[in-house]
Image 1: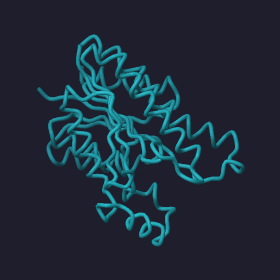
Image 2 (image 1 turned 135 degrees about the vertical axis):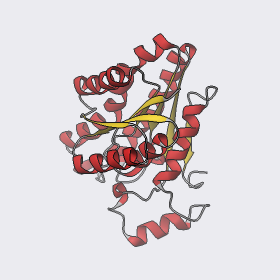
Image 3 (image 1 turned 180 degrees about the vertical axis):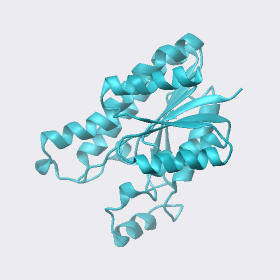
Image 4 (image 1 turned 30 degrees about the vertical axis):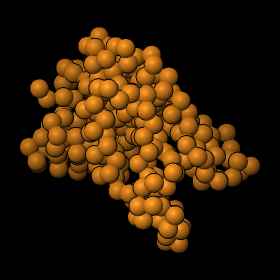
Length: 242
């Protein structure tokens, strides 16, 4: 039976790669976006062009009513919801002393509250069906912290704690909840890094290279299929945080 997945922030980067990979492996995918409508439509066309099912839905997951509308759309349109991938996120490179309230609230609003909103909106349906999977996309900086990214690091660390607690709460109902902590991934989110910055990070990465969005997408699919892995924070960083 074909399954249904929502991928938030799916118009580019890790989200787009995940949506595409899931569509190629038996999932009907709801592509969530906020600003990049053209990219979302292009991804939708690609998935449908390959003979697979998908749809797009604009929503700001930091707002509870919009997250709820996204979840309800998937359930109403496909009659099911088997997987939620909470990928939507924003970064912030700033000293703590130079970070204002608005920046702080935006980062936590999307990265942390967005995960909470999506989980709160989707778990009741999954609990009633006694199955489902939630995969949150964190960051290696949520595990070890990053200088000049204290707010971003904290927002992702909060996602890790939330993942573990939610797994204890709902895994008895047959739902897995896990978090992936990517390392340096070749996406636009890291476009602020110079060539020298990237080379310095790669040099201390045991795998000796940057990761790709597809590396994360494959791990998402693996976790979505496993029913005895839950409450875990899984690093996908080439060994950087060993």
